[in-house]
Image 1 (spheres, rainbow, N blue to C red):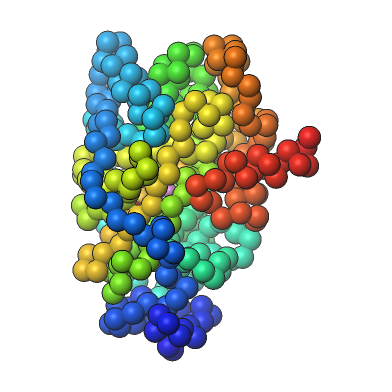
Image 2 (spheres, helix red, strand yellow):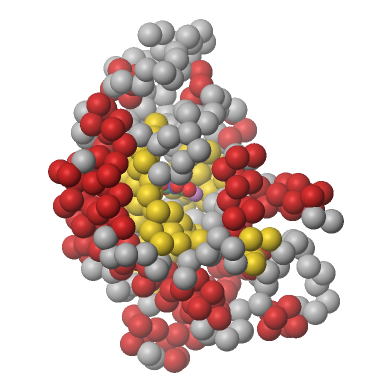
Length: 367
Ligand code: OGA
Ligand code: NI
């Protein structure tokens, strides 16, 4: 297999040990090389707010208002903040990371048993190579669904049916992790509601019967970290993303026309708004443009929980918010998460203008 960057004949039909082979070479296949404009380095850290949720979780109204003010300022500007004292047990977070790492360290033949099939969102995948052939992300992923109203064994069932009976423990840990992050996601929905000056429970109730797409990302070491990206510039099409990253670092956010890195905090979850939440606020809150870089000598793991509405739910701003921004015309059509998910999984690769392009595409069919 030729792995040279300039003249690659690399084929994705045989990914066995691809990353371990490439780690020994000095170059990377051209499918992984990104345009220079996407590779501009971050030169500063983002001074994003760190929001302490302890007061809110205890029912302290003053502390809650303070948290909501910080969230509002961050969401009006870039849609990115971190939370601490979030109520998710730190031991459980460590166990989830441990399980993710153990999974990615399995031989490729084991991981491939649960490989993502064309047309499915779930399973193990390398670099989305089954969908795309250029600007590939330097990563492996494990993705599963977590319906908020599903059975209390959905995650265990996923692991056992995709990878075999030996995966019960992994499934149990991720099941508990998802239950805990779901609670946090609904708490964040309350704070977002307060921050927008609407009914505190509006978004909580809106997402209570929703779903999450849950993904563990593994970014292997890379011989040419300056040529590729772990994930390219994009905003998440989903509503709100709750991410936990290990201590290595690599997540970056585009603010004030510059890439800024996010310093990892083991005690914090990173929260970023996605396109669906931007649409739910008529563009008032920003969907955050971000990417992840990779490293030459350090591999990295992140766990992402992408909160989504129930598929058939209409995505339109709440009446209270529309009334308070009367002069603003509606920026997006009414659409469902089903419509938007289909667009981003069948017609479009998420980038910085997904929602804009979806709006054009959707209104051409639904004038
Ligand atoms: C994503 C993402 C960043 C990271 O999965 O959508 O932006 O740090 N991940 O893993
Ligand atoms: Ni993302």
